[in-house]
Length: 135
Image (spheres, rainbow, N blue to C red):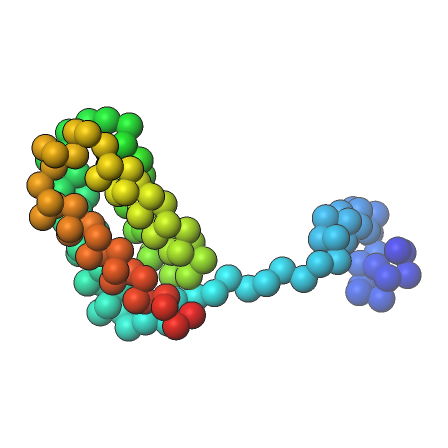
């Protein structure tokens, strides 16, 4: 290890310890890069507007329950994934939102929820899926 450290120009004890820690923690497995969204900024901005509409107009009209809380958290995850331009995170957020929406639609209280409001969320999911369909 010391020869390896000297070859890299690390000659201090602290440097050797730090280098050992980095090598020990890496398990020598390469980390795959996070797939980035490759879509025009205007499409991302339009999806952000639609998500803001869900957050500001649709979710408040639904009331308060754990199902609605799950939908709200899933919508927040969509926003975060778009902000980070992370394709994998967006896929996960789409699945979470889809599951939360399906649970809400299947619940007996969903009769009080306007179909148009739920359709807004479904449409946002369709658009989000189209952003990652070819990736």
